[in-house]
Length: 291
Image (tube, rainbow, N blue to C red):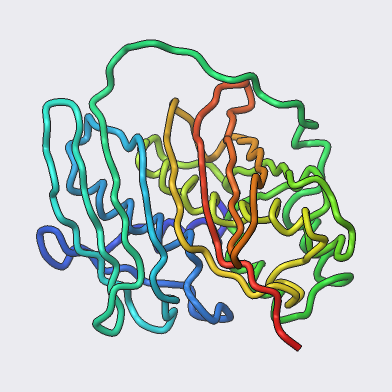
């Protein structure tokens, strides 16, 4: 385990200050606002700590309400909406400065057998054939990114080995491409066997690149180069089959639509042996700066 992954695991180890109230910390060095994937992962940790161990997360639906302040703690309040025989539902509100910044609904299920089918995994090169996240970021930082942007990417991605199959949007500004992108990802180091931990780390990583496919369709580079003003609006995930976040996962992403100053991304996350593990949908603000 590298020190950055250890730091991220520390951020996910929330402090319990009341029975259903938790407190989380954030990166503070260079990030001007809290990374959305961190808030979503922490909120899911809070929800999961109020659920029996025999029930795994099967879905989440979230709204990003306000930018998070990395300089102060985030308080997560959990409402125990329902405890049924098979399903458990939790609602989590993240608060800073007396205002909600994030809202999560999550559902957990007791394992059961049932119908089983899935789509076919798309083709993709082996992750070992691609540059590592550190190698790519070093090249991007030199060729395409300002020092401030490179530092921000380095901090939010330092625990995750993120390997682009194609070039990211900020490296191909002006080139209109298919509204689809692929990345392989896994943590830089092995994790404990806690299923909730793997689900929360996949949630963290899922917010890194999903809206790239929107940018590719318009030849835009996004916030990294300043040609789009953007922010996540909502995020939904369905966890279909067991997986490990410390083993390679293929994130196959596409955008079916952008309009009205918003862009929609949808994706499937596959294990390396071809099992469909997660489905993801996210919408974000996508505004072209004026002047």
